[in-house]
Length: 278
Picture (cartoon, rainbow, N blue to C red):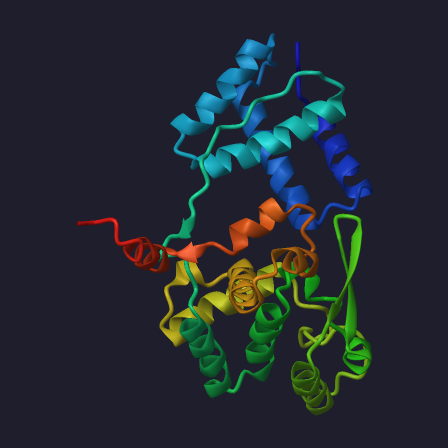
């Protein structure tokens, strides 16, 4: 019998915190655990009943990728709880191309930067360029500091792993000039008016407003899509997926492959070049 109480949920939160999961990831995992608690408020008597949770998520309209993400959180909790029960993931065949309505193009990215500049929002224009030009996760923006601009390097820590990224001279100069004009003499480059580093919520709100100003579909404008644009551009230029995986901080090249998927338009064009249609 598996009974998940509020006390167990709090212990799970502490467990994730001790292992240095990001606040956003912790919040997401606890939310997913609450879905399981709502599904079985009186406990789960056997594994067969737990398997029904997967079908329950599908019936509620969760996309297959979302179902697997939730199952990942639940499986981590089960391991933490000491249970040997595990839920199998839905098998999803990966698409070889990007959906057009989700792909952020180079031209759309440039429109976003120009729209921020035209609005006089230098901080936002530079933040978008920094995320995209370095292929950063939004949580990795904080280590871009005044000090890192001098050395041309920044040390990024994510999920217990450290990696060093290089900051191109042109970007370092733009950011250094901005810091000088804004009176930022040390610490993170991108801060609020009170001097605190911008958090995920701040950044999402700014990007959504920018999408409207730049006439770019809102569903395309989120921090991680800038990272995807970096990956596709880097791979198209250098064709070195191993090096790209290192830059992005991926442990597996399989993950990097997701980032380098071509657009559906490009995929169709290449299929047409096979000349197999008579």
